[in-house]
Image 1 (spheres, rainbow, N blue to C red):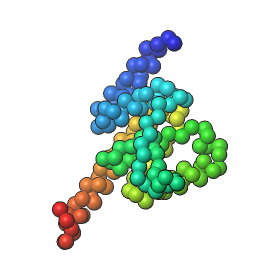
Image 2 (image 1 turned 30 degrees about the vertical axis):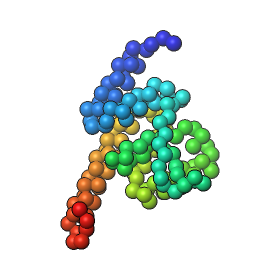
Image 3 (image 1 turned 45 degrees about the vertical axis):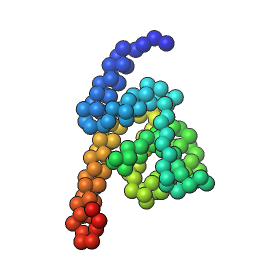
Length: 147
């Protein structure tokens, strides 16, 4: 397969931007792999101890545990199947009940709109970090809370 140098430059710039904006290198590299494969995404699934299926756990596509952020990438099967849509909404609700913010993107947007995806992720990380910091301040200021 011939190498498209413009593609490499575009995605390398996007990954450099993600890292510059504070996304850790492994997560930025995962997005590069996902974007490179486009429709054949390189899935990095993480299992969380959030009750959801018969095993009592669920898998998510990308996880930033420190920011309590889950990123899900949806292909066409998620859009055309009513049961898949319902399952995704149940999954989102279960994650939210356990303190995770869930972002969903179309797989094709990794290749076509990576900057928009990156902006949304960075805003979400910033939001989550502010929420976590505020909760910690409240916890420490509450009489009787443990250190």
